[in-house]
Length: 155
Image (cartoon, rainbow, N blue to C red; front, side):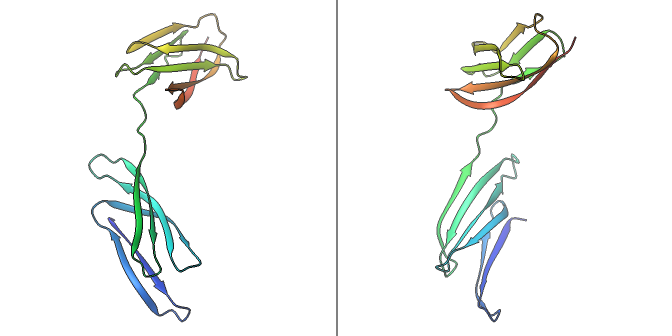
């Protein structure tokens, strides 16, 4: 499915106009808002068939179905930061692109266990002194949270 269609009808169900949109990429229409002036606002996702990466789009058409504005909004891919969780006493982070990032690991009640700047492609923290449990973590790049998850420590 690479196209979607919009049509406008009068109250007697006579078609006023019909338009076809898309064609170059796989479009998914998620929503449509009809405006009082007869225009419409549509939004959804575009899937890049080579990478399977999805982009959001918004489109505004006038009362005749002509595109007034359309914008693709690329979603930021997850940064290549990951936690290796063998369930041991060690909290290990893989940072293959050696990104400048920060990690905060805390207890479920919000007490910070670890707050550190990542400075290498691979780093391990010994957390044997902490009890078994679930510990949420958040990665930050330029003080913005970019990825989160939970690390599980077993006895």
